[in-house]
Length: 198
Image 1 (cartoon, rainbow, N blue to C red):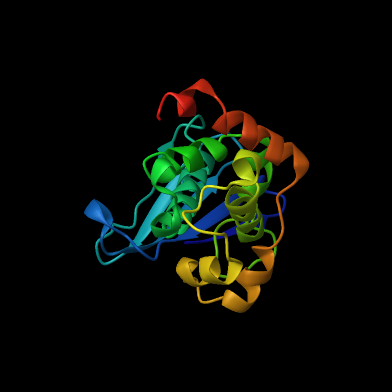
Image 2: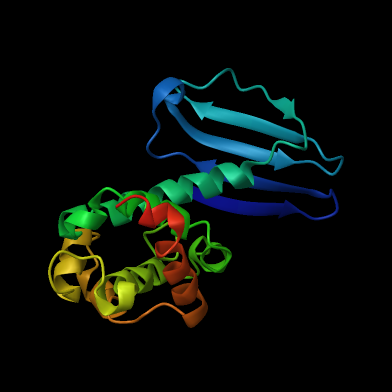
């Protein structure tokens, strides 16, 4: 999914173009959606493609914001990415691993950085920060035990992620996330929620 924001100086409108690449369900055949946020607070949505409705637009209340929908799509991308590591996760954490990541993404310090991809290509999220969190979970979480079945090996983790960027991914898997995120993850993993999952 690619997002481009364009402006129309003087009109007060800005345009958000969302190119849909992997479309499912009732939207098959739609390959471009344009959302225009008007100066009066309304939004106009246009879809194009073979399966799209006729090229007319309709107003959407200003309270409906696609920012949350885009963030949710990025959240799903992150969860799909880290799910590739399930075969490496220790038995006692296998059933909790995906819930743990869902909760990690809700940590304010993580939320503030992980959804901003910066200049990274071929990803919808801050892959570098996700890799740093993976490193922390693998090497230092739980007092240094980590949640991997065997010893944490960054090269093996990079290969399991299979994103085609082992040369870029591997070095980042050697760095921990920031101290505030480490503290928040430790607090989460030692919370009643995860202790009761034993």
